[in-house]
Each structure stands twice: as C-alpha cells, then as structure tokens.
Image 1: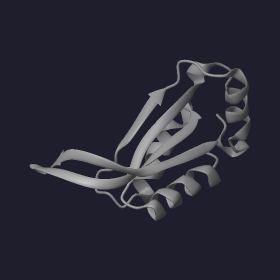
Image 2: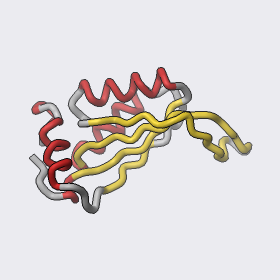
Image 3: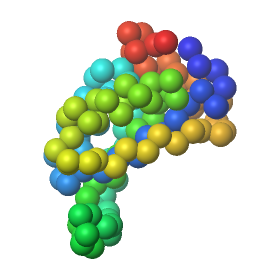
Image 4: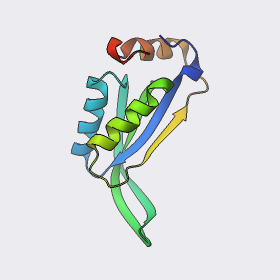
Length: 114
C-alpha cells in the first residue's frame, strides 16, 4: 500500500452529461482504480477543437487514486468514454492529510494493488 503523498495522483477528466460522468466514476471505483471520484458541475469548457472554438457544458471528474494506477485509469477512461479524444490528465499529489491518504490507499480494491 502507498504511504507517501507522492504515491498518489488526482486524474482530471470531463464528460458531456452527468449520466456519463456518473457511469465513468462508478466504473473506476468498482474496478478498484479509484478510491473516490467527485463529479463537479456542470462546468463550462471553452476549447479549440478541429479548427473551431467550442463552448460546452460538461461535468468534471476528480479521480483520487494511486500514481501507479494512472495508466490503467487512462485506459479505462479511453475504453468507456464517448468523446473521440477525452480530457485525461494525471496530476501528482505533493501533500495531503495523512489520515485521508491512508483511507485513500485502503479504499482501493486489493486486485488493483501493485
């Protein structure tokens, strides 16, 4: 089990609807890849896509997990996401409450360990 803040990561992603965001969140938690996924929104995203400026309402996912599970989280989001190119950013954790980090580590399914 991870025991240092640097062992953890927060993954950011977004989805077009609350339903899709909830489905992605549940899949990550059910597979033991995330201890918690917060769904925030709606949020407004303004971005460049295929030569145009898009302005869309989305729902932001804040995925709390271990850094070493980042690649599996990316693969799962790519597999299940409806977007052609989903936002997926893996951000390292530099610090945090030790009790929360202990809960986070203990909340990941044993088969996700390692």
